[in-house]
Image (cartoon, rainbow, N blue to C red; front, side):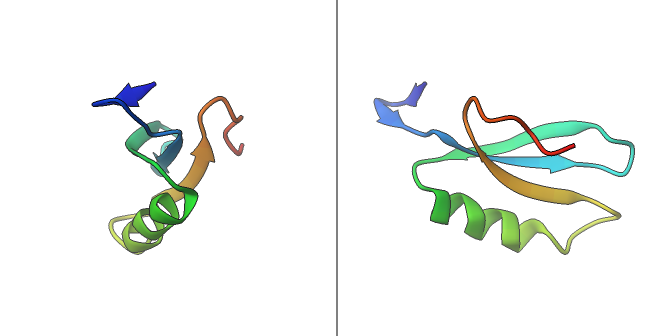
Length: 60
């Protein structure tokens, strides 16, 4: 998929303490997505953030 014609294959995913998963954003590079995930990691109650490539299985 694209956003304005640019490929954004890297996803930042958030999982809350109830196990619900949400896509936070899409990014062009893994490094960019990882910086976002790292910056969000310490916020809020028991939330887990990770990076995955579109089509990649999420961690369980």
